[in-house]
Image (cartoon, rainbow over all chains, first blue to last red; front, side):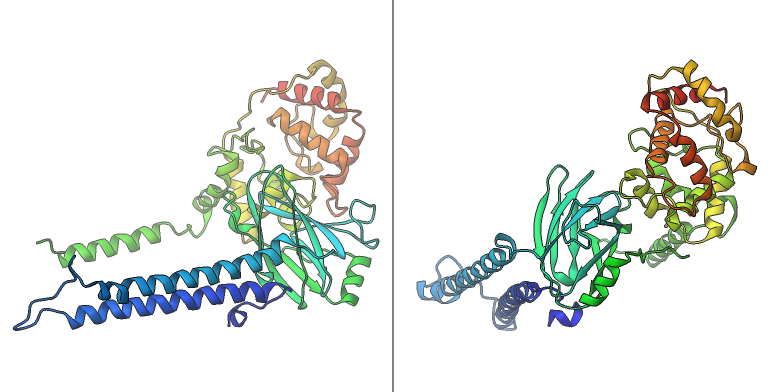
Length: 229
Length: 213
C-alpha cells in the first residue's frame, strides 16, 4: 500500500512499511471504534421530549465497567505488545545487526551540502582512487553498502525516503549503518533535521545503477548536477 | 454574545490578501535587488558588512561585475563545489535561490551600491613584510588594491583579513579555482601558489588591511 506512494528501494523497506502499516491499522481500528461508540452513546442517551440525558455516574455496576473499560483496556495492551514486538524485530534487523558490506561509502553533512566519498575501482575507502562527489551518491543495485555518517557543523539527518532510511548525523561522531538497494533509478536524498536557513535547499540525488552502468560511472565519474536556470 | 460583523470579516480578509501581496517580490529594479538580498542577510549581515562568526566576508561595495560573476560561479559549480570548501558549499545552494541571470545582476547591483565596510583586524601579520610581497598582487589588483575590471581583478583593500588568508589558502590548495573553466581563478591560483606559507599570507592580509579605503 505505502509502496504505491513511495517505491520500496531497499532490502529493509518492506519491513519498515509493514510496521508502519500494522500501527496504522491498529490505531485506525481503535480510533473508529471508540469514536463510533462515543457518538452512538451521545445519540442513544441524548435528552429528548420526556427524557433527560443519562450520564454514567460513580455508581455504575461492576459488570458495566468490565464490559466497557477493562476488556478494551486489556485488548489495547495486547496491541501494544504486538507493536513492541514488531518494532523491536525490525529495529534489531535494520539497526542492531548489519550484514557484511560489499563496500563502504562515507557521507558527510554540512550546512548545506552532502559530500559522498565512494570507494572507487579498488572498492576501498581512503585510497587514491576514491571518488568524491557533492550532493550526488552513486551505488550499485543488489550490493550491500555500509555508510560512515558524519557532520561538520550542526545536527543533520541523512534521509533516503525510497530506502526508508533516516539517520541523524552528529558533529564529532561517526555513525555507521547499512543499506542494500533493490531497484534501479534516481531518487531523493534529503536532510530531515532542521539545520539552518538553507535546510530546505540541501537536497542530493541518489543514483542506483546496474552493475554495468555503475562500473561505467566508476571508470568515468561525472557530476550530473550541472546547474541550469 | 460576541458576533463577528461582516464588515470586519471582509476587512480582515482584505488585509490578509494585501499582506500576502506585499510579501511578493517587486518585479524589477533596485527594489527587487534589495528584496532578493534579504536571503543573504543571515550570513553577510544587513549591510553586507560580513560576519566572522558565519565565515561570511564583507561584500558591501564590491563591484557589480565581480559579485555577479562569483554568484554565477557558485551556481554553476566553478566555485564552492569542492568537498574541502566548507564555506563555499554553504554559499552554493544559497546562490541557487536566485533563479535568473537578471536576479543575480540585480542583487549584485544592490550590493555594489552599499557603503563599503571593513571589519576590524583579526590576525597578527607583519604589514611591512606584506607590502613587499604585495608588489605581485598590485599588477592586477592595483597598487592601492582598488581592483581592475579589465584584468577581472576585484578590489581587495576592503576585504576582511581572515577572508584574505582563507581564500589564499584555498587558491593555493586547489580548493578554489579547481576547475580549469574558472580562468580568472586559475590566474589567482598560480599567484597564490607562489606564497610560501601561512605567515606570508597573514603578512599580505595585514598590508591589504592597512590600505586606505
